[in-house]
Length: 135
Image 1: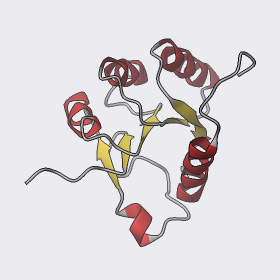
Image 2 (image 1 turned 180 degrees about the vertical axis):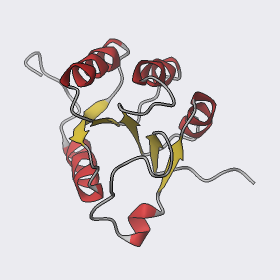
Image 3 (image 1 turned 30 degrees about the horizontal axis):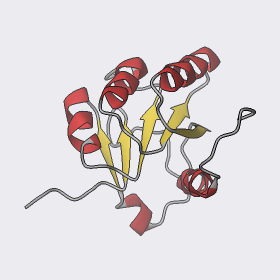
Image 4 (image 1 turned 90 degrees about the vertical axis):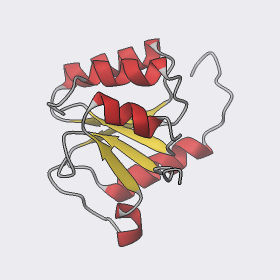
C-alpha cells in the first residue's frame, strides 16, 4: 500500500516543533507530518504535499540544507518559513529560496497558529498566478 500524501509537511525538530499550536481543530492536526531529518524530508516531500513549513530554528538540520534539498527535488508546493526572532536568518532563507525558484507563500512567526497557516495558504492559492514586473 502506498503511503498517504501528507497535506502539510513540517520540516522541524520533532512533533513538539513549536512552542504551542493554537487554533487547531482535530481534523487540521491530523493533516500534517513532521520530518526531523533530511532523509525523512526527502521521503515525505516526494509524496507531493499540499504545503511545506520549514522551521528556521530547527537544530536537527540547517534551513539552507532543507531549502537546497527541496530545490533539487523541484518541489512546487508552497513553502512557509516559520521564523523565530532572527531577522537575518529569515532574510537569508528568503534569498536562498528565491535563488532556487521555490514557491514561498510567506513567513509566519513562532508560535505557529494553525489558522494563520491555513489563511496564508488559502490567500496564496487565491493569488493570481501571473507575476508582473512589479511583483
